[in-house]
Length: 85
Picture 1 (cartoon, rainbow, N blue to C red):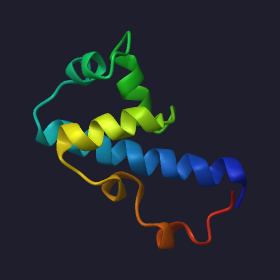
Picture 2 (picture 1 turned 60 degrees about the vertical axis):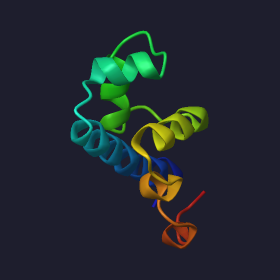
Picture 3 (picture 1 turned 30 degrees about the horizontal axis):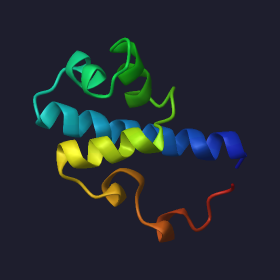
């Protein structure tokens, strides 16, 4: 497994969880983009599809917004034990 593929899979998993939380909270991609101070909802679309990585400060905001622990989005350290870095 290559490094790029490994991180890509993590980005996809995080993006899917963000999308699920966003939809459950009835936020549009535009709403979420505004809250994270992105210029366009396209950034949210790219994050949700795994094409763009989430910045740590945005993860903190999402944890607070959706009342989730960071483990909800990125998993537990033991889940990444065999991940190539």
